[in-house]
Length: 160
Image (tube, rainbow, N blue to C red; front, side, top):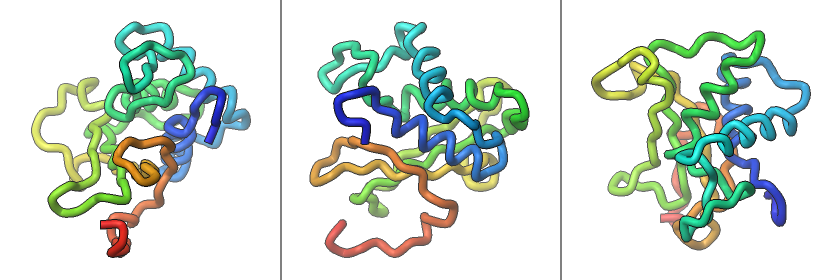
């Protein structure tokens, strides 16, 4: 975790997911790539990172619901990247308290480019997985990539 500095966990997670799924090649300078993503977000008032209390803060954690789509779109514009899939991506953000009644957050990415309508799901989008570490609470503090197939992992009873 980047304590005391800029928080890169979402950018790092999305870069790793896109490399693993074959959409981008591994950038040789990951920190510079993450910096480029954050600089892009800082240019737009509606994407500017904010603290939990709503105050704008350039180094705040990114929110997957607000920031994943523009970050992924920026990353796949890099030379050597594959095109955005027509059905988009679906970022599934898991947390320790996921249950059938409280499932992982799902964030559609890139679907507006093609005016895709209808449900997003396993058969219609490329699935990206991330784990949002919440410590002992319900608010995330760091996001890490999670390999495909993680949705089949057993849930530890003490985490429910």
